[in-house]
Image 1 (cartoon, rainbow, N blue to C red):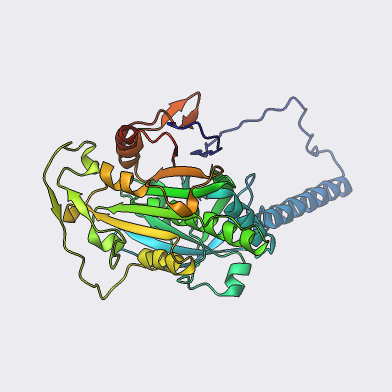
Image 2: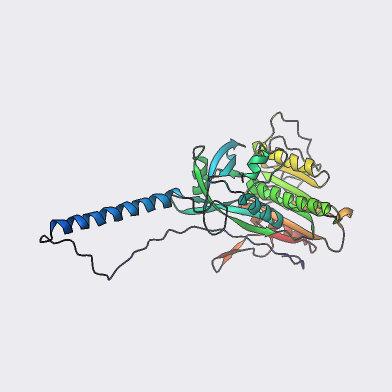
Length: 388
């Protein structure tokens, strides 16, 4: 990390392992009634066996019909039901889920996680017994959830259908009303209280953590202001890259674009020097992506504190060094001695590697690894960097 700043972030990717257990017993088997037993003795044995079998069956039914937990937690899986699945593009959807067994405690669990920073929950694929972490979307003015639904613990997720992803394919094939088991929250990155600036570099579905970071930062500041804590206004600048226009349909950048013509980050490398051209502004789209609506709602909710720029591979618009350099330029409203500045990077592995270097595995854990790539070239000593 190119920074002397002290802040704590954490992340993990978990797999559920299938275990096979065997049991042995040295106890002697219960003797069965001998042929010489009396009819009364035989009836007594049959009665005991019948009662035992009935009790075992009832116990199994009760265990199978009762939830392991009605409140989202990190120790056991909680059942949710799939309420809706709205297409965002031809490859991704917006999922809405509600707790299978409503509990008022879920709202409190979510609120605690929002106050900390960026968080995720694990979805379980029951046939293969594997799990995948997904990031809940925050509640904004564009959210179709009612107050009652929010209080009942509804959650929304932006999930892309990966042709090689067992969990994402499983989720996209579920029928509406089906049960989904989840565990969490897992805190992926703690945003320190003194944070006043975030630059979020997002690729594809990495926009979900970006929305979370913006909501956590600004809603926390809003509450501090209500409590009489007058601090400089925080800011978040989101740079969102997609391959296709349909992923961010209707999105218009807040910064005029000067684009370097080079290869996409999808090829893992790019040209360091090339001609630059000024692109015309996007034409107005009649249809707006659901995720773009979420971003616009966040901007409306916190005017002047959220900036979003869109990048599209198919239109030769890519996030380059100059884009990040412009985004980290100081703002007078956030320049104070206690200001923590963070650059967060989220998206596919190739995207993260190109922007900030790959994460690494060591001793069974996924670690940050050194800062490399485009961000290292900028040598931003006053900024902390974290890969999600």
